[in-house]
Image (cartoon, rainbow, N blue to C red; front, side, top):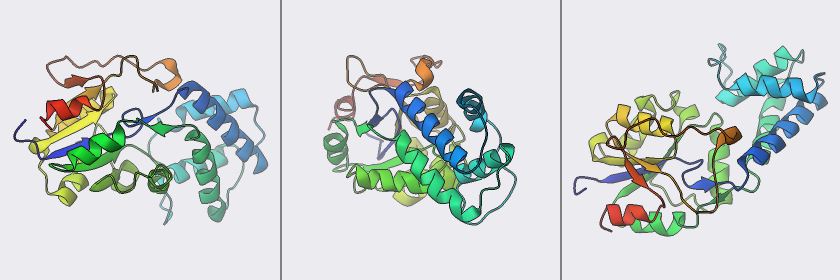
Length: 246
């Protein structure tokens, strides 16, 4: 590992944990439904849940609205599907409020701060995350007291590409001056491993054992489909220090 100069992290499920991800999704869905009802939507919660499950799977909405994040665009289109015309100045406050509900009760892995502080003594350290509303990531990092941990923060919404597309990593390389071949990427899901491989980085899969916090969306998180010779497996963030001889 002597060639490694940069260590980059995924966010959700890698350093940000939840003790009840299914409960978090349920609270978020109900808050979202209530917010849309207040705007005039007439749809039962069960039907609304069905719309939510496909909300993030479709292509990016084909319209340009300055200042709109990808999630704001999706909410605008969802409103149209529900027969309501959301004024553009009301979309951002609505999106901000429902995303905050999603993050309620989530917390940093207790090893995050000491491990990253130690890594920064010898490496560039960055955050590269798939997320469709960039402002919330910076707000969340401030709330967690983690805004100073990283040399760069890259959000897919701001880049226009998401993992496993390797282009999402390019800004991180440009900001830090670290090459892909000199980098580790630490994540917890298939898309993280695939993205790192596509970018030419060394993937590191974190799979916690007997630890607080889980991240299994709808309790159906897939087992990593890549073979163990394609990534390095760790069971805690602190194992990165041993891996890199820190």
